[in-house]
Image (cartoon, rainbow, N blue to C red):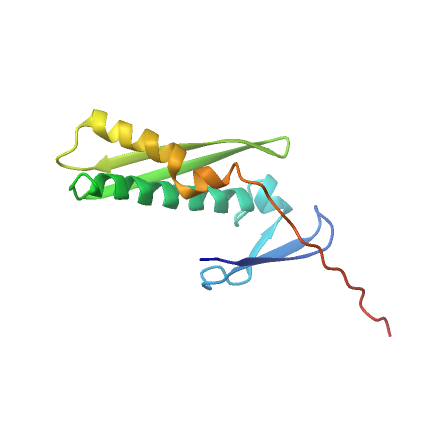
Length: 141
């Protein structure tokens, strides 16, 4: 399985603007820029999207681990906080609240600690990154 997303950018870092589009169409030319990323203006940014991906992946992982015990969660709610300092992601904090009858608090904590390390996004944050560059120059009239 492969999933794709695209980014388009025009202009300089501080004065430019861009759009993000995902394969599913959930993001469709969604605006982002310097102010939405670094100054708190309304709009999305890469770190917010990483937090959303991590929260979703982690929560699904916790659900799967609980299901292996033969228990069905009523609800699981996770908030992921990505900390960015000096253009470096310093960490991600996952805060989960669960309504899971039939599971003790200690069991729930053990499951979440396991998922914290083993969910796909947690593991992806430590994988090698590759890139490919393509370049063109527009013909001027």
